[in-house]
Amino acid sequence: MKETSLKGRIISPGIAIGKTFLVTEPSTVFSDKQDINVETELQRFDEQVNHIASELSALFLRISKETDIKDAEIIQTHQMILADEGFKKKVINLISEEFIPVETAVERVMNNFSQRLAASSNEFMRERAIDFVDLATYFKNQSIEKLGIPEDKIDKETILIVGELFLSIVLTCKRLATKGILAGSAAPTSHAAILARSFGIPVLVGPPDVSKMIGNGTRIIIDAYNGSITLNPNLETLDQYKKRLEVVWQTSQEYKKIKKLPAKTMDGTKISLGVNIERLDELHLFSPEEIDDVGLFRTEFLFMFDQSNFPSFEQQVRWYEKIVKFMDGKPVTFRVLDVGGDKFLPYFSMGKQSNPYLGLRAHRVFQYHPEILETQLRAILQAAKFGPVRILYPMINNLEEIEYLNRILAHIDIEGATFELGIMVETPASVFMIRELMRHVDFVSIGTNDLVQYTLTVDRNNENVIPFYQPFHPLILRMLKQVVNTAADFDKPVSICGEIASDPRWTPMLLGLGIRSLSMAPLLLPPIKKQILSLDLEQCLDLAEKSLAANYEIDVQRYLDDFFAGKGDENVKNS
Image (tube, rainbow, N blue to C red; front, side, top):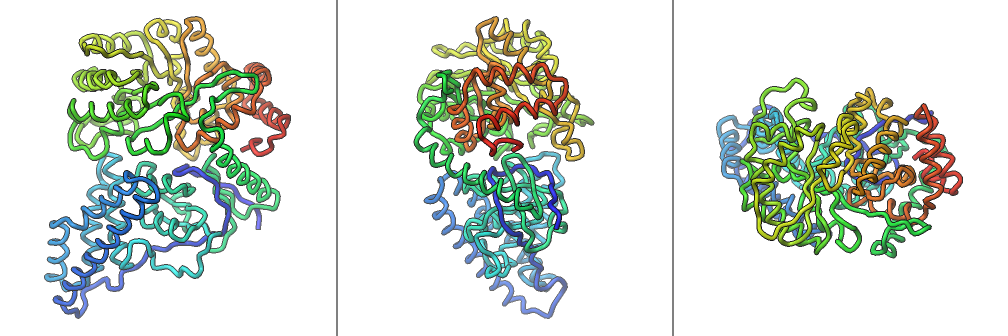
């Protein structure tokens, strides 16, 4: 059959080559009223609750040993739902009053909870709806890690195809040591996604109807580094990916030797490497010894998860102190609360917005509620007593915005607290105003994801316009160069924390443009450090000079292909 390519959305990085197995939704044994014995069903319900609770407890202990206690705490969410008296009462009432079996009663109760959460305008609440649906599956299968599928047909070459990424799917993949997962739907901050990343299981989201598009036994490659899906790959493609897998494995082995070494090019140019994180439970994914800083801590996720109101000053201090102390004297860059766009708080209404990406977002919220920012800044500065911190303002466009935020900051006086102040450069306006803005800050961090999106007017989450999302476009390169040159005039550092910082194909271009600080997800540190150690800065400068003079994105791609071909690194070419 002919090789076919699809685009996917990355949930957990990695590459998987194998054959598909379609995991179908288990059906309830009974769906309507049946001649059942109520007493027997109530006893079955009690037994199943105890059995699943026992499995969850054992699973908690096992994951605690295999990964980290914070990852295991995900299981506690399901334990709490299972132990909820309201849930039990509703199931018991349905069995007793409507004479339906346990599985049907549980499914109806869980679906009711799930639908209410799924209808929420808050993304975090919608993602939690999956936990309720997944628990109903436990009862159908009478197990957490068994999906009611013929496991004798699954081996270590299998890639699971699922409609929705559930925690039970991830646990099954881990237990059976399958290659990876391709899902029709999944949220990157869901419990299942977090655990998949911790286990190192490659996960991609394909088209919504992916489970209907692909049959059992289809040869497939999922590339959860660049978000591509290849069906029926030809021999040449298979060979390329097998070589890439070898490189990935070799890189992971080599990284053990180089992880504590400074990231320097072959000619000795030092590159600062940092991590982007958004939760405290990510701290176990890296050690302070292998990085130079936390280049981006997205604080809004602390406000989004497990919160029924704005966190207090004391709670925020505990959060920020923990990461500052963990970094043991190395800087932590805290981006202040950046809600709006696709991030909302369940307890805070920002009114109806027809275009949230261009509406009430980030610092614009503080124009109406300055007390939110003041409390957060006060907590960050309190944590600054324990180590160096940087405060980062997102979505800045002009002087009026930064001056307003600085007036709030000026009211805060924490004895013994020092800090550096920076802005995110992520809109065309901030690039055009960069010289004026630079006079008010100590550093800048370029958010390339939004910068590309706003400059080229293309929604990077819309699959229909993915070909128009071109971070390699000469216009984007010239904007990056303008920021770098202006920062150099003021002798102030520039970092990049967007997705391109974590792509080894981009690394020589960024170094050639003058970037000396990169920040990325912790799991993506190894290939970037390895790439830096293999580069000659003069060659990178030459690559950037030619690319800046180009008029078309395809020319830039060709220069990159030639660059890596010259290095003999065919695995990065066209990756």
